[in-house]
Image 1 (cartoon, helix red, strand yellow):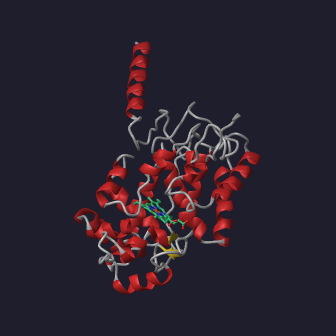
Image 2 (cartoon, rainbow, N blue to C red):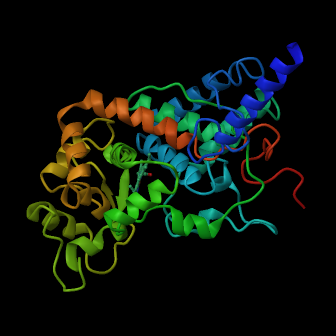
Image 3 (cartoon, rainbow, N blue to C red):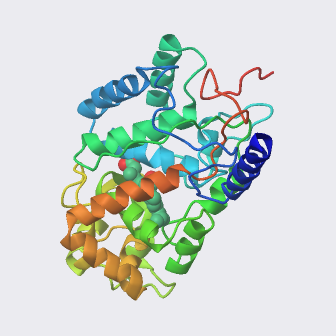
Length: 337
Ligand code: HEM
């Protein structure tokens, strides 16, 4: 009797674990659920170590919060949240750092190295690079005024990177809204996730090259994007000329670029979303427009949805259990030749 009950339990658990292989499901690809307490015994100070290094860096330069948040996004959208983004070029690795969305754009990699060194000192071989990215993203958001959430942990690091997926799977600023939605759906994320997570653009900066098309030649007819406020467009043209100035920087949220709040959504309502992908949330779909309006009207709702969507994004196909490894150095797989 006892043994038939235990076989039944094993069968039920196996079904649950198999079901957990679905994209974005809290039970990741390795079958083990991520849990916030993962390092409570193996590295009790892990979270404090990450937080204190991130806090020092953000106090030094507020933009670092934005740069760290974006790293977690660019990691998770490419073969899951597995630290693949952090691998440098080597004989076996074609680094994702060279992809269109990342090249000359992602920042904060040295800070991740600094956190890794501190964690290796405290608890060697224990805390994965993928988990460092997830914790640093949460701490960044909280430090600049955004919501707090408990970060599920236990991700392991990949042995591979995928440059092609980095080029294809991370949404581009000139993608149409249906394409952006499709890229989120491929990761198991829905419309609410698209709009709530786009709210990350309440902090940080964009290069001129990421939105120039809107100022001069939106649809190939030498006309600007008329959904962009005319006065704001004029101001942007000043430092984002037709040619040159590609790397000139502009706040994604012109109102409060270093504060995590809901002004990003209020800007969109008045035609002052910087990226095409920001503004189309209002102009190309009634459903996403309703969410933009709801978040502009209710910062608590935005914070709640943002935190929930970050947990969902952080659960995209993690490696767990015996999969992958815990890298000693986030830039290299262990025992590389
Ligand atoms: C919806 C699709 C998205 C598109 C098309 C997009 C595109 C972009 C682009 C083009 C930039 C400026 C890059 C540059 O010019 O160097 C940027 C910056 C940024 N993105 Fe997104 N993004 C999207 C979603 C997200 C999500 C989901 C997050 C995080 C949850 C995020 C966080 C950020 C942050 C914080 C920055 C500023 C980074 C910094 O200042 O270093 N983005 N994004």
